Length: 121
Image (cartoon, rainbow, N blue to C red):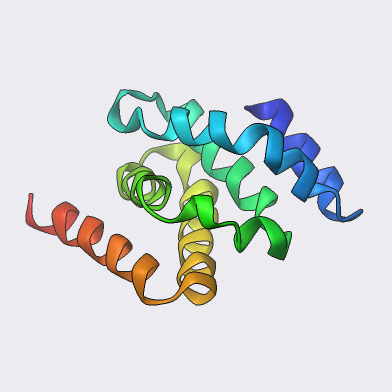
């Protein structure tokens, strides 16, 4: 995941994240589904990689975000804690904001439902 993060960071300045995302998003979404089973380092790297990939508007607008991937990211952001998670939590929160702005109500509903679960449990 760290390599993907570095590739996304360097590709974002060249507009190449769409091609990278086509290859890696399905796998990253699958990892995100593991949720609470992920250790802090993996959560941090995953949120950071996804954030850098979505600096490309075409990646952010990808319809594959709708549904479980958005819910999984919201869960990861909510479970971010510890010394190294501050920046990843900020990246994850910004990613969710950008997803809501791009995809509108359907995405916002997914995030709100997850936030509600975190607050009430």
